[in-house]
Image (cartoon, rainbow, N blue to C red; front, side, top):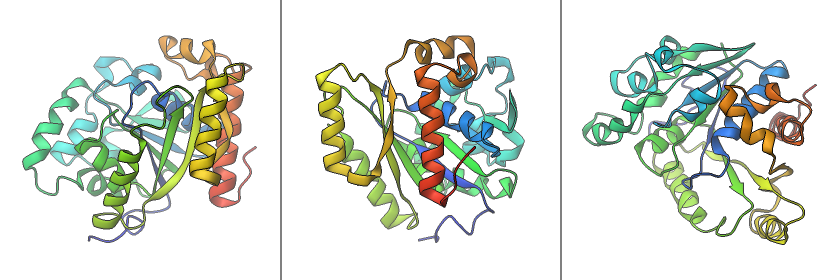
Length: 269
């Protein structure tokens, strides 16, 4: 139905960062992976599709700068480039989110082409970006469905805590349904383990279980539990700029290199 996403716009790779469970490091992964890509010389756009707007806040985008936003893209058919603002980080832009995006979930129920709203707005991006990252809300709703229909792949942050794998099957079933009905080119980009504490037996067990279940889809790089990663959003910065020497920042740079290497055979600087 409606073909794959590749013909819709030029060379940008679109990755949805998704997990219906909150507090797993989804937004942190989206903003720091985007920053790492930009540092490595790629042009990156982040679409904040979470009504909480945490990605926008974490990148220092004040509320008064968030208009137009991803709401206008979804509900008013605004082309994505018209909602783009600069983050202050070279080669890293954002489509911000406002709280009124929460109403889009209800409004989309009766909307025409409700699953394709984001995808329909993306062709205008053209060749401006190498990567488009979509920060999804912590829910399997029409916002997440729009992200998955628009994406080439989905990256799943998985926290190394109890119940981490519970409920993940629902996300994978959703991905499979999207693939069958709307976006046949969609695939799993990979699973990234977050909030890892090597001193914690539970973290080690979750990591083992994830690798047993997903095999090579789990990235070798793990994101450690790190206080600097937690502090960075309150300063409106990715941890890569807040403290580039901390363990969390180094891990996200390693993750970016691994993503590029696995996807394109590239090695980032």
